[in-house]
Structures are given as structure tokens and as C-alpha cells.
Length: 247
Ligand code: ADP
Ligand code: MG
Image (tube, rainbow, N blue to C red):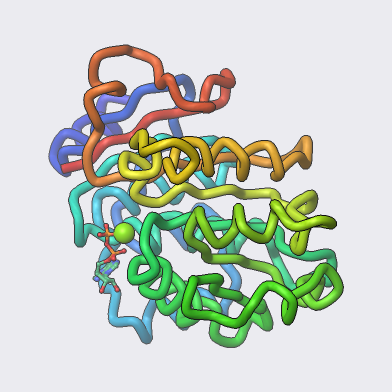
């Protein structure tokens, strides 16, 4: 226990929550304690990642244990791989049941970046990743039947809400097992009337109505609202949630 905390302190990893699994010191350590598929180990190696970043050291074990997380780490610290790696492990293999993971990014550019990182970590897995941005084809070309083929969705809030608001909805999210809000601080910003992210995120939350769904929030900063209270005011309120912050 002391050792685990000394390791966290040395890497400026701060955690809150009960029964937090130990941080992993290296990818070898991760592979020794958790069963990661070989395609994923290969992709981590070919991405040139020699050592997990602090957020990866702690968030990957947490999410592999199926814990919901509220995670905070600076820009450029590898938050994308921190949530993609455990999600890929959980999804195991392609299943034609529709989207099982949804990653919401505040902007088109960030969604594209996340899509690229996700795609490269997926090489050899057979998973189908879809990115939904304003630039992409109209909603009609992407209906409930074609979405069955996909496993992972990367999207901006407005695109997804647009599809959810069609009659009937142009996308089904009832098989979603992981809902990730990336740059969560921006997603919880209030905006003018119904263009506000907060409102859109609420709609996405309710559409992911699988009882098994788990949530993960990643951000570069803890915004005002979060800093002032000990427990997140976000939808993360279950006993299984954990907060992890690294610098
Ligand atoms: P963030 O979302 O925290 O801003 P990103 O996930 O965009 O950061 O990652 C920033 C860069 O670091 C990307 O180019 C990514 O490929 C790279 N990266 C991620 N994890 C590692 C790692 N363990 N070692 C080296 N580079 C990494
Ligand atoms: Mg990021």
C-alpha cells in the first residue's frame, strides 16, 4: 500500500476512491497483470510508446477493472490511449450489435484526432470505428441497419444529437457499454439555449440507456464547478466511480 502510494506520488498521480487498483509502472507491468490481446500490444509497440504516461498508469488499470472514472491530466499527456486501450480490451472482439463504445469530443478536429488514435490502436482487431462530424455524409446514408456493423463511434455532441433527434432516430445507442466524454470540462459548459453542450450531453446520456453502460470523463482541467465540491456534480455519482488526476 505504502509502496503503491509512493509510486503515485513520484509520478504526481492523485487518486480518490475506494479500492483503487495499483498504477502500472510500465507496459510490461500492465501486460503481466492484465490480459491484453496481442494485436493491442503490437499496436502500442508500433506507435512507439515505450512507457505509459502517468494518466495511463492509473486510468488504464481503473477502467480495466470496470470502474467509472473522472480523470484529469494535461494536454498532450496521452489521455486518448488511456481510455481507448481499456475499452478495446472490454469489447474483446467485433460484434454486430451496433455501437458499444461512444467517445464524445467537443470539436470536429479533436474527434478526428481521437478517431486516428483509435484506428491505429485497433489495427488487426477487426473493430470498426466510425467518426461522425459535420463534414461527413448526411444522416440518411447512415441508418440503424448500417450502424450495426460498427463497434466504436467517435463524434461531436451536435452531430450525434442531430441523429438522435430524427424521427425515427437515425442511430441506436442501446448497446453502448462505454460512454467517454473527452475534454469533459468543455462539454459541460453552458451555452446559449439548445446549442449548449451541456444540454446535448444530457441527451446523449439518456440515449445510452443500456443498464450496463459505464461512463468515463477525461479533461485537461477540473473546471470551477468541480473544484469547489468533493464529489463530482456530473452524472458520475455511483459508488464505483473514481477520480484520478495526474500532472
Ligand atoms: P491528450 O488527449 O492528453 O491531450 P493525446 O492522447 O492526444 O493527449 O496524446 C498526445 C500525443 O502523445 C499523441 O501523439 C499520442 O500518440 C502520444 N502518446 C500517447 N501515449 C503515449 C505514450 N505512452 N508514450 C509516448 N507517446 C504517447
Ligand atoms: Mg485529448
